[in-house]
Amino acid sequence: MPFVVRSTAVVLMMLTSCVGVAACTEQERASDAAESSLTLTAPPAVPNITTLSTTDGLSLPLDAYALSEEKLQVVLKARALLIEKCLARFGFAYDFPVPVAQESRNPLGRRYGITERAVAAQWGYATAPRATPAVRPRRADDRNPALLLVLTGWPDGQVPGNAERPSVKTASGADVPPGGCESEASRALVGKDEKYDTPEIVRQLDANAYHQSSADDRVVAVQKSWSECMKKEGYDFPNPLDAADRSTNPSSASSIRTALVDIDCKNQTNLIGVSFAVEVAYQRGLIQQNIERLEAVKNRLESEVQVAGRTVSGG
Image (tube, rainbow, N blue to C red; front, side):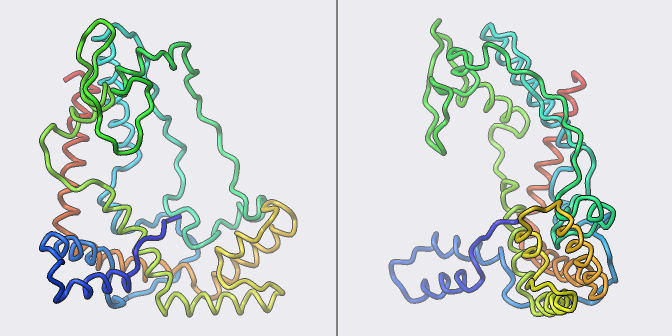
């Protein structure tokens, strides 16, 4: 679920506090201006609201600025290969693990609460079990101090936050790449001197759009309608997420009954359709405000995927 970030009101307060204060530097003003672009100051227009009973097949505008699961796997595989080559230079024959792609699932998940009736009928608010992907077993040398030094660039393998990485050597006196083989691999994929926004802005905008749209009068109104529908069936929940959170045994018979009524009330009030349409409007507005930064992220990711593809194919 998206995380909470600074609200519009706080951002506006920060901007106002800068006006007329001598101690407020140009750099601080620029930082505040950039921060203010991460939220919308006014509710956006929502021209069309489609009737929806599920989020299956839907995508949000910001998805265009993130890697698909398929492309992410290419990047992760390339990074693993680069790390292995780097380690080999220092005498380590090591299979760096690549995270296994999970089976395909609705990317919006339960963003607006449960919608999968077949799942609810069997599992209530619990999620249907998924096949556990095969995991490469840990090797005996995973905690080898010499390997960890070369892998991370830190003597004990523990990288403390954003601390400046030290310049280190192996026991034989060979220079370890800054940040170890992990950082060397990342630099090979994204470029040593390239200046760009990180994908973190996409996560920030996604979270802000979700929270702003959740507080939008149109979404609040449809949640109230949903809540009134639930009360007619004997349930007292302010919103769908609260219904799931208050289910102490999400797969019990009681939770199954509640989840099915929950879905029925969503369908009667078009909660999914309204919530999705309003969030799309917020995301589009935020994309317009940050289009240059987002295009830089998109271009960087495309470049990274191309380099990764060549790395995996041996080119």
